[in-house]
Image 1 (cartoon, rainbow, N blue to C red):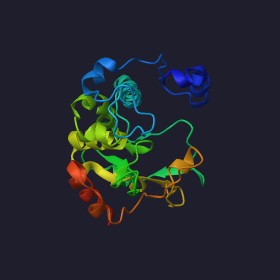
Image 2 (image 1 turned 180 degrees about the vertical axis):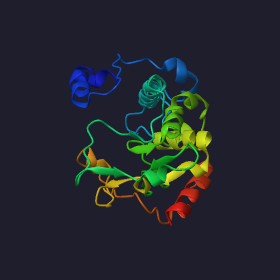
Image 3 (image 1 turned 45 degrees about the horizontal axis):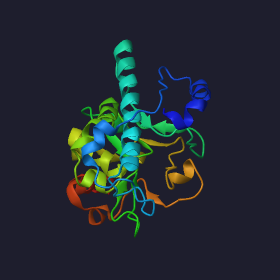
Image 4 (image 1 turned 90 degrees about the horizontal axis):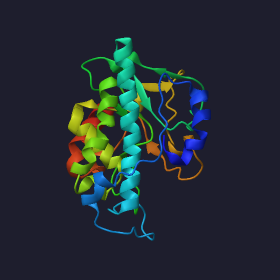
Length: 243
């Protein structure tokens, strides 16, 4: 975790009792993104999306650094115990799942390593021009988690679509590069409530009020028509599997 919640880190660690954790001061990532800057300073009248300015780039790398470090700790623990995790969930620590306990479908985890389960948001006019992967809640097997953790190391190579859209695209790109289109599955293919219901209709509503745009978590209908660019084939594959 980073500086904004550092003062609360001890309480978070005590509440979750993880097998490993790391608390660090904010890291200055400018050496990693310096050559990507096209606007300095940031234009406050524009959102973060699409701006290659220091503040935006710092936030992007900070997010994926945290993910990279979490995966590093996971890998160290796997090595110490002598086996990989079968299912890894990435989420915010302030997220609350409604409706009771969750159940993992072990059948969805079979096959070759490298499974990734995500939630697809519908395109939002004026905000997101196409369907996109949620970057706050996703899961996978150990190899899938490692692929997500590789995003930080790929950011400096994502000239163009990686920084011109959002962190959603950064994550999409890293997963598709590391695992290929066959890795993608809807999150509800592996994780549901114990009664079989899918609780992921409104992801943002799980961790904060407002911005509760609906998402198509289990069957991303029309996804093939909504996507564009280099990850189109990835989402086409996901749409076929969810149909």
